[in-house]
Length: 392
Ligand code: TGC
Ligand code: FAD
Image (cartoon, rainbow, N blue to C red):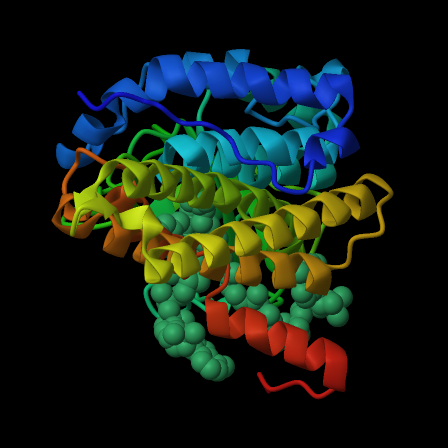
């Protein structure tokens, strides 16, 4: 079992921008990850299992719906606290952060933002406590970057909806109790609907053979004439802006989360560079190694500043989808580049499970694709600054 020597790095004294409450929340998450996650995460990835015992711990540190108000069972925290929790979780593993992201931003958020009062009362407290786990079905086999083309559909049958279609690449689907599913109605409008495990015709086959996010369960959602009660339809949103609104919240969490993965890689590389002797001196004494480390801490610091400012804007309800998209794209790419450079600094040891580097790197190859690929986010910024839509 690898020892967790992680030290957080705060080159620009960002802690001075955080409140005492935010720092306490971060320290609580950090301590939990150190105690419960890093000792077993390598084995979980090697064996491709999601350790279910993490669920209760995640609920206890407030990682499920951090910003959901207390009246619905959530911790009622601000957006920067949400970001800091995601950072600490992803320092442990991107798959762990994925589980919390999906539960918070893709399951609890749509029920909170678009659901009826009955739906909020029925589901949110149990989701916050980890007594129910959820997943989010948007992507289909033939519609990934372009979810508007989806073919999964609901038909009004009087006292129920009949749901048909399939979703793929769905985080948490193999064990989720409920799925928030996006489907077209007879008018071609995208609607959100809550599908519970156990409904006849609803299955969730697991996706095997992933080289990435191996501590997170991924699967499909298959709907074969599933009868869904009418009261499960999310009444307060229609159209693609429903699922895309959820993605704003999840992408914000990812922008923070990947800083954790980057910090873990940098921290490990910095320590290794001081300990590993070649040609009679520590490899950290060579200029080329210093260049790598200097660029890493610079990029981490820039990402920290970007997300802190984005958090302030989000707390004020002023963060635009395009600003969130930019932070997701920049920070994931930053973290992936740092993982690759850290791998180089660790030499051959960098490919082993002795160090967290290769695991972070492989995880980040998913993170740069899900919640909108790097190139889709470039085009979102491109559209925002030019006014020209490159998608249509
Ligand atoms: P477009 O015509 O631009 O927009 C349609 C409607 O949506 C509105 N809108 C948004 N609303 C809220 N937030 C946003 N970010 C929004 N972006 C657009 C827009 O104003 C419009 O509203 P209205 O009222 O006029 O109808 O849509 P488009 O079809 O051209 O697509 C735009 C595009 C390509 C940017 C979008 O489809 C996109 O983001 N594609 C990427 C797909 C994606 O990110 N999928 C993620 C799946 S979930 C996932 O990966 C979970 S991983 C979980 C984990 O494990 O952590
Ligand atoms: P495609 O859309 O087929 O894209 C393939 C390539 O084409 C990409 O490089 C893309 O950038 C490029 N491309 C596409 N369109 C354009 C364009 N207009 N211009 C230029 N280039 C373009 N989805 C969910 O709904 N729920 C989940 O919980 C979920 N979890 C996931 C977990 C994992 C581990 C993974 C890998 C994915 C998950 N996804 C989930 C799906 C994810 O959101 C999609 O994989 C992603 O949106 C990309 O879709 P795609 O894989 O179909 O790629």
